[in-house]
Length: 238
Ligand SMILES: NC(=O)c1ccc[n+]([C@@H]2O[C@H](COP(=O)([O-])OP(=O)(O)OC[C@H]3O[C@@H](n4cnc5c(N)ncnc54)[C@H](OP(=O)(O)O)[C@@H]3O)[C@@H](O)[C@H]2O)c1
Image (tube, rainbow, N blue to C red; front, side, top):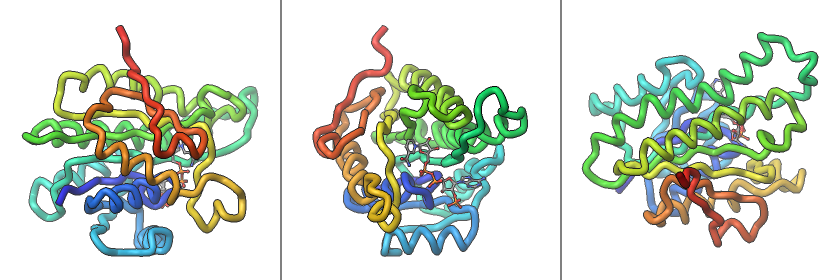
C-alpha cells in the first residue's frame, strides 16, 4: 500500500489531507511537533489505523530532512506522495505597522516550512521508479490582501508552485497546487463557525490521488461544487 507523507499534519488542511489519503486507501506518515499535537491529530481523524507518527520541527532547516533520512534508513515507512500544509500563522497587523521580526515569523512558518518540505522530499520522490506526487496548499488571501502578513506569506508559495510545476513537468513527480478560496477547519470547529469541514475538503485529495492526468496544475476550491468536480488549470502555459 502506498504512503502519503503529510507536513502540517495536525492542522485544518493536514487533517483533511490525512482523511483524503485514508479514503484513497493510502497509509499516512504524519509529521507532528510533539505528542500533544499527535493526540490532537488522532482526535480529529478519529482513527489511528494506517497512520505512523514522527516528531520533527518542520520550521527548522533540517526537520523534514531528518524524517527523509529515517525513511532512507528503513526506520520509517517509505512514502510515494507528499502533502505540504504547514503554516497557519494568521494576524491582522496593518502593513505600515508590521515589524521585521513579525514579517520574518510569518515567512518562516507559512512559507519556509513548505519550502523545506519540498527541498527535502523531491530528491527522494525523483529516485523512485513509479509515479509520485507532491501537493501544496495555498490560499486566496495572497490575492485578496485583506491581512498583510498572511497575504504576503502566500505570495512566495504561489511562485514556488510555479517553479515546481515547471521543474517537474517532465519528471515522474506530479506536482500540483491546491488553491483555497474559502476557509477550511477541522469538523468540530467548522460545525460552529460555518467554515468548510476538513472531512468535506478531504475529497479533493482523494480525487487528486486518482487523477494522473492532473499535473503541474492549480486546483481551485471555493465551493462545495469544487470538491468532486475538480477545477484545475495548468499553472505554466509558456
Ligand atoms: N485553513 C484554510 O482555510 C486555509 C485557507 C487557505 C490556505 N491555507 C494554507 O494552508 C496552510 C495551513 O493552514 P491550516 O489552517 O491547516 O493551519 P493550522 O490549522 O494552523 O495548521 C498548521 C500546521 O502547521 C504546524 N505548525 C505551525 N507552526 C508551527 C511551528 N512553529 N512549528 C511546528 N509546526 C508548526 C501546526 O502544528 P501544531 O498543530 O503542532 O500547531 C499544524 O500542523 C496555511 O498556512 C495556508 O498556506 C489554509
